[in-house]
Length: 571
Image (cartoon, rainbow, N blue to C red; front, side):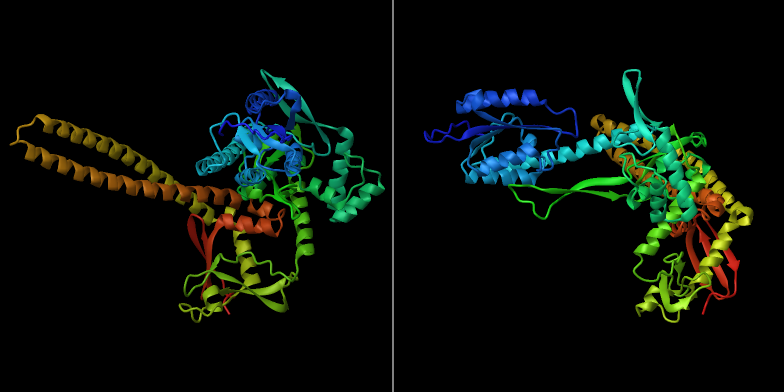
């Protein structure tokens, strides 16, 4: 910023100093240091006394959002023509959001207000170059903010591996206890016996009546209260029921999270049937600009969205669990069923294999087509699987038979229920064994090829060195040798690349088989506990595709192929 004083004798506006300390990180410059440096600059550049300087101070506020109390007050004073200059320690103290910073600078320019940054005083917003530099610095500040947030998140996940309580409002039944471990401290959940009795009763009532409203009413009638001393409402009951912090870390919970591909930061031994579950990253907190937000009065709406269970991070906590894994999983199924019934605008087929069934004619995916007004024995809407190309009357698939949906779903489920007890599971293990054996062979070949390539490269470099001193008569033979060595290196590198590509595919197959193995073993038990969405996830972990041809159903598992005879699917 150009160092020029405002010399208007009648200008009785004041100089403003804005300071901020972020809530995201503790490494930002302290408020007091910022104030001292800004006030010193105001006195030197604008010749004002310290008591005549307006100080706007936001502590513990993120620079990404403009709804900071003191920042908004400064905006109103700017609009009211009370300020002739704004001084900050660094541009990112004003804002870490490019749009907000540029709007503020434009607003100050229109009113003839100087903008000075202690750390970036060479910037002059009245020039084109200065404006470009401001834009770049603000964009960098916004980028830095994202990086800082990512680092904080990564650090929190590292702490989460230890089962720590990372802060926030404690769930009903617990309080946060801080203990010193060496030079650091750790928070852990400790029980509140009276509140835990409430939690026990809540789960007991819900498993009895399968009703959120009924559970809330019963709790209130029996005199139970929330941690705030209020009566229970439907939302409070639902939040407690869905919180995995109450679940005991046992084999059922491990299988449940594994079936949804949830990252688990715990060893098998940690699921000891005593401690409770800690789940992180369950919700996403963010702000949206409000409909009535203006440049002078920025307003944001705080929102919280539940993340998909696949995005959770699970660890075993330091606290004792309250509810057995099987009961907690059963509760999730009941809650999901309630949500499905209340939210469904029309009848649903509840198909399990949509997109997994493949057309026998063209190989394309087959999707659900409901038969309105017709029902299956279980009361669900009857449907068929129909080739998508055929349904949309696209070329390439004529005469493809439709497949009875409920019957196929039921049949495939029956086959998978018995997979752990028949030859197909042995075939899966055999396939995995073959892949692992091949992997060891390719590792040895990789090692040999890398060693050979390294030697060839050394030989090429040696011959290149020889060129510098070799007689002209000898150089052609050296060139020929280098060419031959380069060709040999190319062949071996091509072979190595092919092996690496095969190895990547093999590793993926082994990973699929490992997931399928565990899911097959857990399937009969889990399928009784999970709801419709859970069954979809389980099937997609096991199945690659299902093809119905003539009187046979071909079921392709992830990692191997099996064929089962049947007689009634095609129409």
